Image 1 (tube, rainbow, N blue to C red):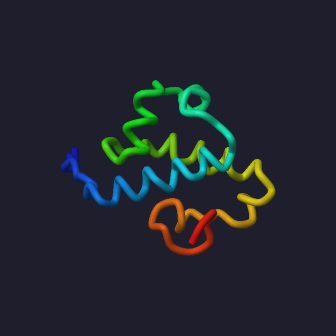
Image 2: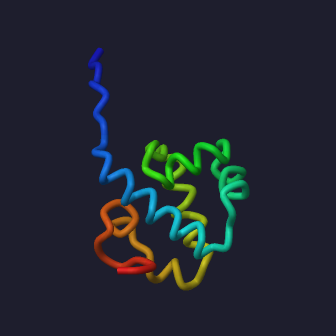
Length: 93
């Protein structure tokens, strides 16, 4: 059995990612409590993610992208590259 070592994302990356996720949430007119319901987590976890103190799960990232894809503008203008790295097409660029 192969065991993978836990790898940590740099603090600066988590802060930038959290800010982009907050921008998406705000664009969709959702508060942290509603977003926490959608992502099946607590509001405090959303706060931690958006402030860069915690990393979102793959489920949470995929759910956010699916939610964004329900919006006509975001479906055409929001790429995974922007969400994950801040490059390419996004809400702000």
